[in-house]
Length: 278
Image 1 (cartoon, rainbow, N blue to C red):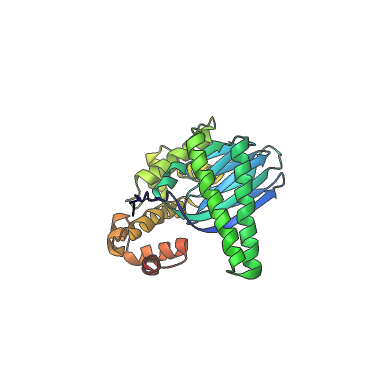
Image 2 (spheres, rainbow, N blue to C red; image 1 turned 90 degrees about the horizontal axis):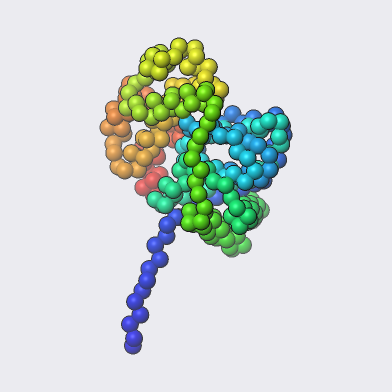
């Protein structure tokens, strides 16, 4: 019997679930306050102009732009310049180091990639509709697998055949906002107050809060705690103890860390650890 060497496939990405998939035309005055969640989201502008905040970055997205939001990244959307943007959004749970290539990702899709994204959006939407009507039937599993394959194909093709645009802005307030976020990221292990942040950035406390509010609907300390929880989530997955994480991230006590974590994630750190061990 001849020997046939097995050439194993190594998945770059594991798509575990689709969360949302839809197309919508937003009115001129559309404004979404913003959110953070623990799954990936892709936002594509088919027509019109859309303002988007993504952590420390502020964009005006034009027709053909696709932006990625990684898990626990704050993001906010609003119609820009009296336009009525047509937007396609698909969000999904996924794992794999390959996904790091899409963090802070802003792309301009060509016609081929545009058609691929429209197709994956349609397939994922169909899978969700089938699940809502039938539950986990064979027809749902078939539809879901088609959606999963479409997302993987799109991401691989986007990585190998397109480019990531560099972030640039001429808005001086957006630049200050970025400096604020960068400062919070650089001091993630400290227990900061608004006055300390303002002093370090040579701003008054009132100016600091005013500029931050232009781009983010969370309070500065609430946002700072959100960043801490992003780090905490990763550390918990790495097996670091709750006490060590609380101390490392500068929380006043373990009990306060529990309160902040549950507010952000919906469950306690202990339950989060148990859930990830399943």
